[in-house]
Image 1 (cartoon, one colour):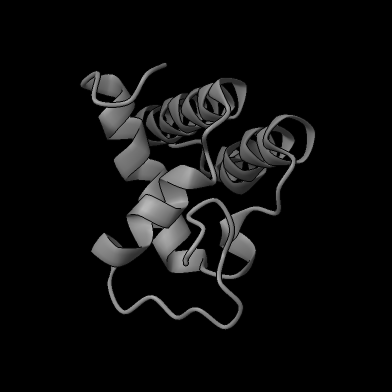
Image 2 (tube, one colour):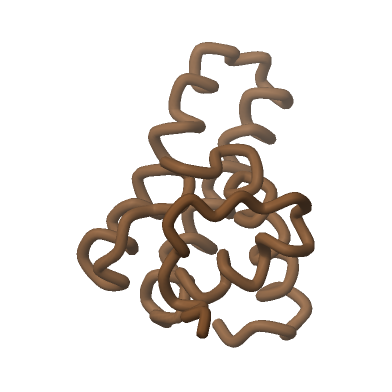
Length: 109
């Protein structure tokens, strides 16, 4: 029987739709989800600032902010290894889908 809260050894996801339930199971902790959400908001703010002011050097902050908030959530609150280490593209997409799902109230903030 498969446990959704942990990755099956050698599991390969053939689609994002198959991966997303696993991704959500790795974000069960409310504080972890909130940190992801805040990090994503800050990423959007920095991106907007860079575009409006043409201060391109601030773009270096995007991965630091985005991953920094998320990894604090995983290591200190969720107490798991971020899925981005194994599934970087699906995890990146998952971050933004979860952000949208929190915005529209589909997932609790």
